[in-house]
Amino acid sequence: MVATKGSKIKMNIYETIFLKPNESRMMSEAILYEGKTYSYGEIDGFVHQMSSVLAEKGVCKNSKVMLSTENPFNFLIEALAISKIGAVFFPFFSGSTVEQMDSIISRYDINYLITGDFVEKREKWEVVEPKLINGMGVLYRFSENIDPTLEDIELVLFTSGTTSIPKAVMLTFTNVYSNVVAISDYLQLQSSDKIL
Image (cartoon, one colour):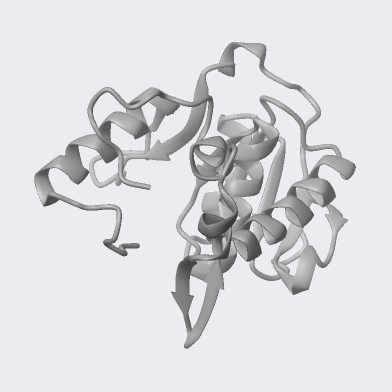
């Protein structure tokens, strides 16, 4: 999908990509990763499976889910699944230390963490699901406090932290979408273009 000025803004990233797609789009190529091509339909299938497992394990609308996954394909599926549920995702550098993750989890009262692999045992880190779909990640639970003020927040990015502790920057879907539109306009993207 190419974003254009005046395009109707959807509720979240997942819905913008997959809401009411036509059959030919669902069969068309979405991603080429490690030599394998995945269609929009296949991606949607993985996202549906992942969001079902996450919801079954307690992830819900406005849950804060930190995502620290090294594999870009898994990251995409997990981020879209979090968006589909209506939870807020916090992408976090997968090379971070456990202490850095612990600090962010405490500071921002993170509800869940998805990592690519098990991390060393930490106090208060409850493993909820040791193997998400197709071996994608490990799900940990920390807090059941859901923050209703996050209603319009899609994701939270962190500053680099070069001058002090990284700070959280909350982005709404509209923030993300307007950036996509601006980049699409600048690059003069067409619906036939493929980017990642």
